[in-house]
Image (tube, rainbow, N blue to C red; front, side):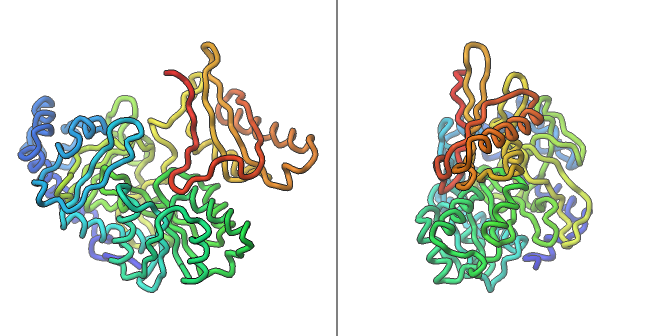
Amino acid sequence: MIFNKEAETMSRDTLESLQLKRLQDVVTRVYNKVPYYRAKMDDAGVSPTDIKTLADIQKLPFTTKEDLRKNYPFGLFTVPMDEVVRVHASSGTTGKPTVVGYTKADIKLWAELMARTLSCGGATSKDMIQNAYGYGLFTGGLGAHYGAEALGATVIPISGGQTKRQITLMQDFGSTVLLSTPSYALNIAEAMAEMGVDPKKLPLKIGIFGAEPWSEKMREELEKQLDIKAIDIYGLSEIIGPGVAAECIEEQKGLHIFEDHFLPEIVDKDTFEPLPVGEAGELVFTTLTKEAFPVIRYRTKDISRLIDTPCSCGRTFRRMPKITGRTDDMLIIRGVNVFPSQIEHVLMGVEGVEPHYQIIVDRKGNMDTMEVLVEVSENIFSDEIKQLERLNKTIQAEIKDLIGSNCKISLVEPKTIARSEGKAVRVIDKRKI
């Protein structure tokens, strides 16, 4: 089912005409209402009247997370605070939190975009949706909640945590759709096994997962352990929250970007020059319709590419593949670029390995070291030492093929690595760099 058929299936010409008008409007608005944006545009020698085509977006300066922090908390808002009905914020673990605001119209728009997202994933008004995204300052919980209500579904607003209770409610309420991070869904699957709950006997049929990168191998694991169809969604607080792009259940060949509200670009991660459709680079978004907190050419630091071939589901928006990594969580180990998602892909392909791991990076002298903690299944861990040694060598060889150098593999007992109720902590970097 397509939630908003008129918008999601419009022709490319119609879409680009709409995008240009909305781009011109938002650039004019931020120039007139936000001194920081005006100063940046003046420094770049560009004014709103220079935006005559969609390609002219390249004349505009980028916005980064640092710009948001410099204007903490409300310096980039384009409306007075008495028109802002809600604020959300990031955790601020790497500096001041980034704060985003919403008008009533923004909330209504966000609800529609999340309804589109859930509909893409196969959810309908007849579903019982268990929302295990965190509620609060994090955008995931409330964004998904409003979207599920706009879809007309029944929402269970349980938030994250209380894992055993999550499973009990699935049984008692007959949840058909689970919303959570993929790592927390694995946590739920593990708890089900401990409780002796057979997922095949539950009505649960779809999992709609986002908020962290996850591999195709993890998708296979989630679908096997929970007996569901696992759908990937994408969003980030600075753009609107969840609801920027979503896989369709029909094809699952990339995430449809809601281009009538978000204008995507792919730029070279080093030179920041625009790249053609099909080439991988850093994903950049301009919000076209947000009132309280529009952003211009926001550098997401997520690595992806654009796909413009038609999708059989009927949606005409461009798509993007699953995020393969980020420019800022990319590890550089002895000169080699390594993404945690690549390590995950290797591990998920090794029999006997559980879908829980942690990468520890350190520096001994002038040499970087990488250790991968890998949980193994109960039967493997209790097996003879030679079996563990063989498994260790297999993983080591697979990762060496990936990054071109050796790293230490530490096989650990089941349930040794701390479980997450939200985003998993995959990397611990101890280097003083």
